[in-house]
Image 1 (cartoon, rainbow, N blue to C red):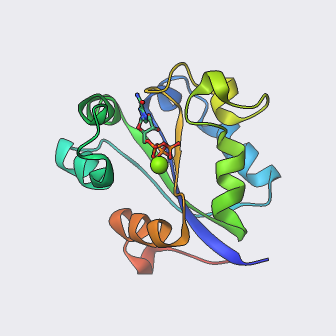
Image 2 (cartoon, rainbow, N blue to C red):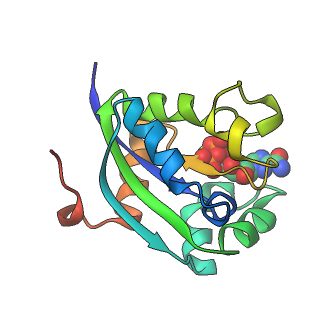
Image 3 (cartoon, rainbow, N blue to C red):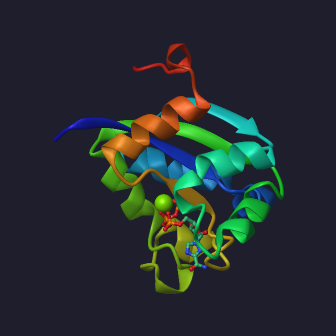
Length: 141
Ligand code: RTP
Ligand code: MG
């Protein structure tokens, strides 16, 4: 299996619920290592840039409003199949459709306030990681 890195964000709703540690435990129990992390209050420009692929979608403004509504916890996760593994831990975008035991089923309230972000492919993972972390601040171990 490929050793990969993926970009994960614990969104403002989950940070406000004080469940960063519970979410990190799920990453660790699945064999994903946190190799870079920082908490940030995103500016509108940062949030719009991060979600630029969704610029034309009807939910874009709500998405940006939500992502700047409070601090987020941003991390790079590393491990075998990290991109798919993290998406599996997260569950479906809409928490009502997310499998039992997933992060979104357990911690998210709505499709807007859905607790976590995870990269969806190797190309987007690379772009998203360098968006938030200069390469020198990522540590493999
Ligand atoms: P994310 O990028 O945040 O990890 O979520 P995702 O891949 O599961 O979903 P994506 O399609 O990339 O959408 C990004 C975020 O936009 C919001 N969204 N709202 N109202 C809607 O129909 C709708 N669709 C998407 C969600 O908050 C989603 O996480
Ligand atoms: Mg996405």
